[in-house]
Length: 292
Image (cartoon, rainbow, N blue to C red):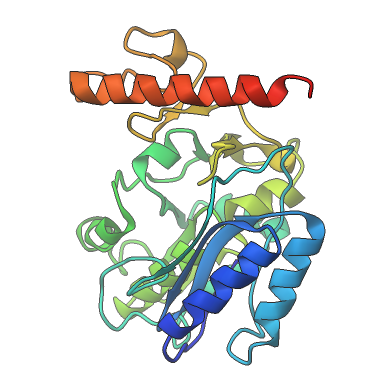
């Protein structure tokens, strides 16, 4: 869920929000800032409905946007509410999607737009997300964080050479700021996918899809595919990067400890600590699965 909206004293909302999440068994992370609210949470149907109703009763969040998907198990370990400077960090002062933003394109209309040879298609996500999947023909900015995206724009895009630009991200929020930034830089025809990749995968059939691969998500499902079904990636707890079945067969992979991307960067002390943590998790799971 997210909404760009003025929030006076966002810090005062943190404790009530944590209390409400705890009361309804909600886990996940919500970010609050002067510019609005953003986050992903999970819970039972009644708990999610109660949280959304409570937020929308607040005069600041009547237009709160949310998307839903389902998981067999709770994908988050705990509930977090954090106070931030931005609900999605770009680091450029004066970028306000409430004042100027690109043209929203519904998932059903996205294929026609990206099939236009005059459109420059940009994936606004980070490199480790793009590696799992992206739209065919999309440019990868090869960024490690969203705060590096403005530099990519300044170095590689030009309003005269790229008159029509379409962008997409996981759930839509990064594109709110990305399109606002391009508008500020003089780009006139700027488009973004309403609801992001997740809404596209939910509503567009695999037969009609222009998407290849899976979509990285920031929870223990790691990735999802069409229909928002959980994908085939795991997570390396040594570095936090996604791990494919192929990666798990490579030297350097140790469940709960390391993967080929981080095995040479971790110290022996870190590996020992991660092994102990994995042993504790395995023991807890084994105990929970025993009949009472």
